[in-house]
Image 1 (spheres, rainbow, N blue to C red):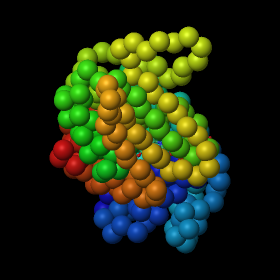
Image 2 (cartoon, rainbow, N blue to C red):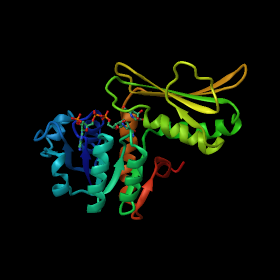
Image 3 (cartoon, helix red, strand yellow):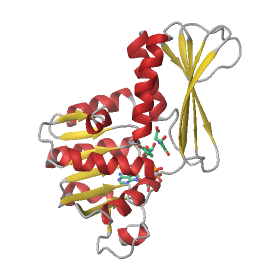
Image 4 (tube, helix red, strand yellow):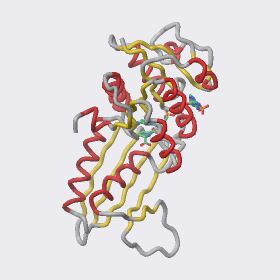
Length: 259
Ligand SMILES: NC(=O)C1=CN([C@@H]2O[C@H](COP(=O)(O)OP(=O)(O)OC[C@H]3O[C@@H](n4cnc5c(N)ncnc54)[C@H](OP(=O)(O)O)[C@@H]3O)[C@@H](O)[C@H]2O)C=CC1
Ligand SMILES: O=C(O)C1=N[C@H](C(=O)O)C[C@H](O)C1
């Protein structure tokens, strides 16, 4: 049995991860951390009945974390701290949190020199294939203008999405460095840049479209998620995969899926 701790246990993704863990015979829910719903039964929060695992306040993680793998879907600053604690305790990591600054990314790289970690802004199989499709499209359409539009629910805290940021990185790795522009207003003639735009509203789970725009035509590549289970299912695959990895460092979902 792989003993799994969940950080962000009271959140949209955390609850779903708990449900997936509880329903999986290879996994055991070891611990649940959050800053809200503290003391409540994690299984009841996730709608799968009593588990006997109560939500522990995140401030106690340093003292209490004890698991094989910590799954983190929290906020950028919380995740950096959780990763620090897990790496010091030799607890492997699956990190889905997004919105990291460049400085925070460097900190995470440093901490993950001590422990194996899957870190991905999107765990869905479809999005990981979408990134591969972008690589191919960018290699054929390297002189086309690239624009990215993402749409998410009104509660999302970070913008642009981690998935869109990674899409821009994937494209830049093929066509070369470009400035990323996240808004336009006033006089702003287009140069060799990648536009990345965030739309927020309602309960949209997550949609990304990349436009490769030429003269007289355009190609659009879109991924739409309408259930968070697409992300949770991938995160569970990552948990099982990282449990068998002993070499410290940061891995991606492409490693997990063999893409
Ligand atoms: N990689 C992927 O496939 C996906 C990634 N995400 C990302 O995952 C993250 C979470 O998303 P979502 O579940 O929708 O967000 P939620 O806001 O629903 O959940 C986050 C939870 O973490 C809590 N939290 C805050 N600080 C800590 C801490 N130090 N330790 C433990 N828990 C803490 C929050 O409490 P409070 O609200 O009080 O701060 C909240 O309950 C986001 O960054 C999102 O972009 C989302 C979906 C898929
Ligand atoms: O916050 C979300 O909901 C999501 N966040 C991730 C991101 O920022 O890319 C992944 C997914 O699109 C849902």
